[in-house]
Image (cartoon, rainbow, N blue to C red; front, side, top):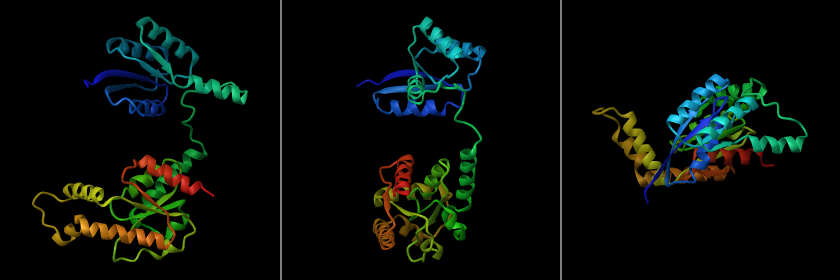
Length: 275
């Protein structure tokens, strides 16, 4: 099947992050269409909007908008109608729905979700915590964590912790190394400890890629250590040992083999929030 192509314009008066996430979630359901995204962010004046409409006329394609200013949205609708370009306001129906449910009119404040409130500073604090407690650093501070992730090398502990930090979650991670006793603090904390695991073949591919990035051409390294790091039998043994350790301490384990960082984080949040 020949792949179709489409230019999709995303027009936002803020950072465009919400609109981009919605668009990408939808695009993923249409694998036979090559969708090229054009982002028009921080559009807060009619002058800026006219410039965007000129570009849309030159590179025609449908428009998804998250403008909340009624005047700007009206201009957007008029401009798209004159070009016979389809327009979808992704926030309008949701705001009307919530307005009916709350009995309150939407303030339509541009970028209303991006305010430096308590939640904002909580995310910043969580990010600092992750940086200080990555890869087994500062184990004395594990009791301050909202969650501690454990697992063998290269099972996505660090990127998952950073994603959680962006949700305001203080996440520490501790590597599990076969033959080395984990830090004692790990067994005494009252915070949730969650293990991450992965299929051996997938882990080996990830580790091979990591080795190729770390080892400069011609640089001599420890062949025995490298062999153990990517040998199938050794890796299987390492993963079984880590699973036994988690089972012994009643730590739940999440298999990240076919999960994105976002999906893994969603499972972690569900475990943290479950009674």
